[in-house]
Length: 199
Image 1 (cartoon, rainbow, N blue to C red):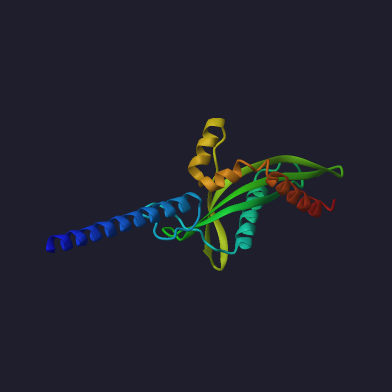
Image 2: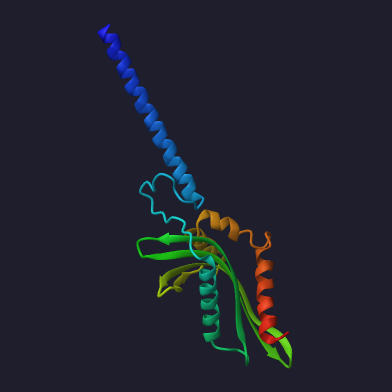
């Protein structure tokens, strides 16, 4: 009878250990799935280099990036008199990088340059590029400190996309022409263009 009790105790311990292991494995896969989807983990980062989602003032970050893009464009060499840079963007994800006390902002940015010629509105250049911006919050302001964009070239472009952007963002970037994002960004720029040139 003593042996039977010991066997029962041993079985209970084994069952508890198995259940605990299964629970641990389940927790691991739940968190890995959430990390791959760009969501906050529930239990642990499990040693992965992962940056959690951050709830920030997205409007302020939006205009910090927009102003940065426009300022950089206006500082470039002008091809025409009274040329002006315009920008619109969509923010897909904001992640906190605790190591450097900064934020990664994954976006698609449309930038266009317009000018007037004999009362005719003309476009000088146009681009639609995905960017990863690095932003810091200093002096009560969000400031762009750096950015990463895919290189030109068919092979390098798609290779860089995969290395720069999370999978969940990549899906959105690949659909910018079919989901209406490109058209929406173009409309936003045209509103600013008409306002600026009084057209």
